[in-house]
Image 1 (cartoon, rainbow, N blue to C red):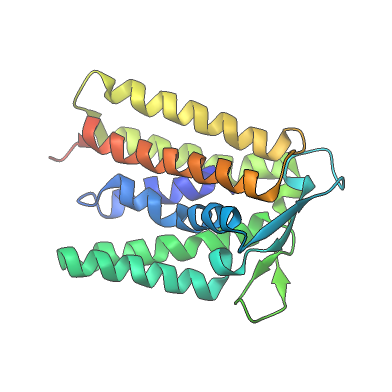
Image 2 (image 1 turned 90 degrees about the vertical axis):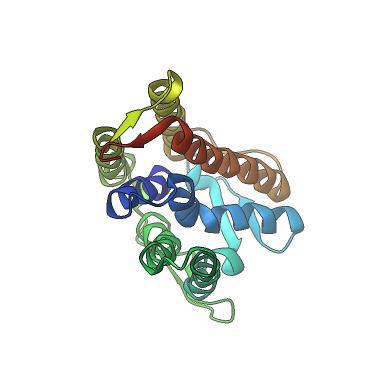
Length: 221
């Protein structure tokens, strides 16, 4: 998933409006940021195959167990939550961050073909294959994305001239990138190149969410 992960962060803002939207979006994207880093380092790998006409049907995941397994997701989520709690002593937001990181595995399990591991040492791979159907993906992932953005828009207000533009330009570009992922042409290049591109892309998405904190505020404030 792509916008489905970001939707988790946007929806979480309603639960803990005191928390930074940037952190709330970073949590469900953490696995993908680590994935990009580990791909560049050669720790994790994917291959490109001609098993389908679209981007996602052409990516064969060989090993993403350090960034995307359920066990390591719990570890990464625990580290993020613990770091936040030690800094702020805010138990509620810390738990939301932990759940946000774990949500990545659940959403990828729904969308991926069977390639999601439970732990680095385990051989089983799981996935329901939602991405095999473009219409189903547009509905199952797109609807929560639209609802989460709408909820965020209704419960925040722009504090600068860029507040509105920053939201809708970012939403538009992210939605276009998501659609290209599920319906665009097969990728080219190496695994490391894809990792570098992904690392930059997800870092930009997280930075955009942090920027929204600066140009929009919660309406109750």
